[in-house]
Length: 124
Image (cartoon, rainbow, N blue to C red; front, top):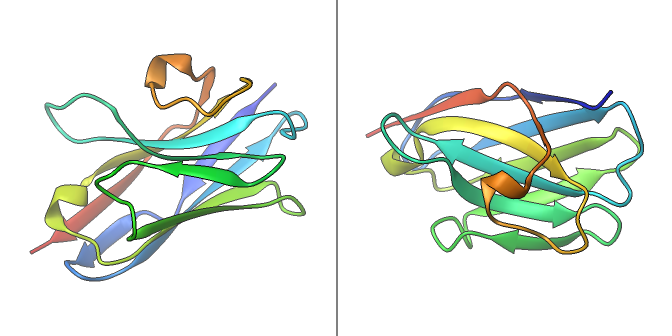
């Protein structure tokens, strides 16, 4: 059974940094895409970034490009989202997701497995 567990959220001032980690278990993820999404109150869940596990190719939303970096550690089965230069508009619950697809997808409906989410709050 696939399990995704996020950690690393918290409260940070604008301009600060946080690293979110997603611990994946239950199977091999070598043929999976791992994504991060976020959802602010009253808003739709939106794509943040994704990585294809096997080759570490990445895709980022325009809103985070240049500020966020996604990586995976196969030895630990984790996917880490390094977030720099955080802005108040980055405040949301961040979710890790897994999709067994050929290509990296950016729609949340394409992902099969989800973590419980971790809150990120950026104060101005």
